[in-house]
Length: 389
Image: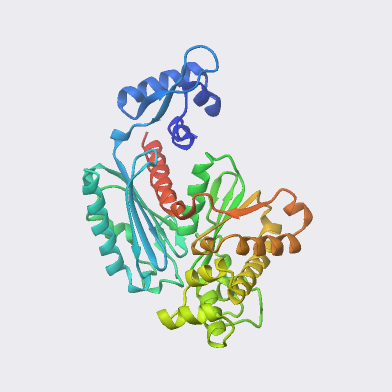
């Protein structure tokens, strides 16, 4: 890892700490830092607490380097943000979106939001260092193209990089949305955890894998596609064509479908009232009903949590992570879903795999995707900078 990488991943660090992390001598670090301060790559931003002697200055990437653009695209929503090189969010916007409309309409809106947010910050396209984009589908990371994405078929082999190249000279990096959530959590913890999983449950179910402190993408970028692990061979047919995938039985649409059936069968007056008022039910409606103590909603939530835990137990046995972080729309349900997942995982996994395992909602919450997009943009920009030298 280069000194710049160490500064970026530390979210503010002293020279002495930088020498310790990088395993370089203090003399070499001080010399390199002096050069990067002179070049305007790093800046000093105040002093840290003293442990004896002179109080050390905090180093960070210089904000005058420019700005990052981050895009977190979900199946039903879109977020765009402008961030500093050290990942402070300067401006952000989120709105509903349907990726099934295809790249033309969706990316046209992304470009418009990018222009608006840059203008809000008083920045220009020329000041953009790099762009990070998360999409809800498998991505060939080297080419930046989606590969047979089940939730967004019109995007197959479409080049998001080429589409944005006309507006920005900055490099564009595209990755799976859950990989970016994993990157966001990795940055939050300053790489303090080496082996963990991030599970996103929304329209689909996906998994970001951090192995030895880096995101593991697999040979072709499809690592972590856990939504199509079978949890019931006699279950409903998934959009992938197979039967009983956990995504078809425990993701947002499946939970909404079960709630609709419960409302129509007279099993829940609250869900029936919501259905009559809105014409349809969503995952968030079920979450609201569950938090209100609705018996039918709680049963649906517990069933979905148990199925997700059944799938996770196999993954936990295989990978032996220290933590599993759960994010996406499901997080709004609260502790009942989490308890059902934990019970299922601990019941089905080997004792050694779960001895020190922690399962919790993703601490960054709904910010994880955008922060991860910024991490991707800055990390890959530093990598390119290093390869040029």
